[in-house]
Image (cartoon, rainbow, N blue to C red; front, side):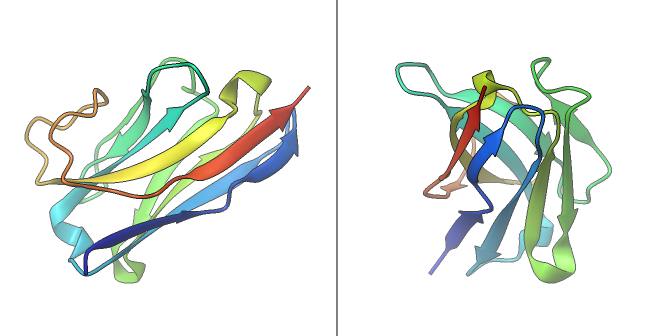
Length: 125
């Protein structure tokens, strides 16, 4: 069974850090780019960051650039999102998603094959 499972969310004060993990099972992560998305209550889903299948290319939304870092460990079938200098506006459910290959990879959310169930991140002011 193909699965993406996010973990690492929680409650943190503004200025704090969290590291999210996205663990893949049932498929070979090496063949997939991974994106992180988030959705806050009453708002549309937003692309946060994505990383190519090899890890050589990364992309970030302007809202998180310089604060978030995406990385991957294909040997562990896991992708990470290190989130520093968190702000209350970062509060959302964070999802990871898998995109086969790299061609057309982006933060709009189109073309992703598998999605996780999400992990809640809450940043208090």
